[in-house]
Picture: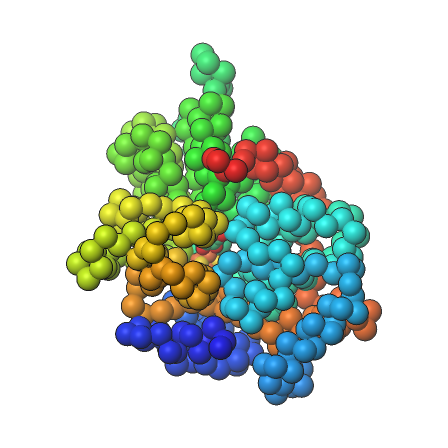
Length: 420
Ligand code: 13P
Ligand code: SF4
């Protein structure tokens, strides 16, 4: 059964749009992000666009595509490695050499120096990160260039530079008596390479949802406050868990004077939160949790920290995709889990752990519309092109940007997730 079959079949859920049953190539030529929860989001001008997938791949049956992928991988052997994020559809996951969350995949990209090509089945910022961490001469390939991330688009380098100039004017640049600088920039992994480079240049660091707490702890030791972008929810949920009151987390709305906060609020801030969010995770609500608790007494509710604060507070636990996976795998007694994260991952957990009852908190199942863009048709195409000696859809980060971004990524990789 394909993941789209699972989406359409899931009861009592309704797929958010019947368009999901179509091949993603239908949407490569349209301006938005296509079907799914972020279809209203606009792809920024200048983002890479996917060209037309050759007809043969669009016409091929799923079985034929699987055979072609397997044959191409066998022909390439250790010359290629396929990385897959947990949100990928099952038809892709079965071909991944490594499956993981953003932190694990960033690490994995570094552990395959012999591979000539890394095929990244995830989204654009993940492939950029792999290119930054890859060894010289390795090519990183994103099977569908339209696989972006609407949250990552919410912070662009110009807006962040403008914010930084305003904050420097307000805070100055001198350290306090304890040697702590006025502000440390922290970017979530879900951001462009340009923002990671910005952090590298300004004493900042990258975090993922699995090591955000460790990163903030280290940043608070070096700085009086943190500018956290682009995901307000991960920033707020993590800082709140560490004891920072929400009153000391003003929001920064880009292209507004002082981000829409007052000078006093910013001077008192411990974390300045960028106004970004994930369109998939903002769908989860406290009402859904209350309904799950009413209908399934004893249910264990686990959500991703990209969910709004009220949802994380109402849940039993919050953690990265790997945290969620490990929590389910570790349950020794049959348990009912209501999960607040992307539907492909929830459906896969439900299939993999039949001793548990596992369902998605949101009854209207919407996949991440950009993870959905990676389909076996594109994977077969990029792999067969490699067999023919051609590299298509290569993601290349400018050398200077990559050098600066590597500084912030190396700091991140040194700050392991708790318990890892
Ligand atoms: P993880 O780092 O938890 O895998 O999350 C990545 C992501 O994009 C979640 O929306
Ligand atoms: Fe971006 Fe949200 Fe999709 Fe993750 S789930 S890739 S944050 S749009």
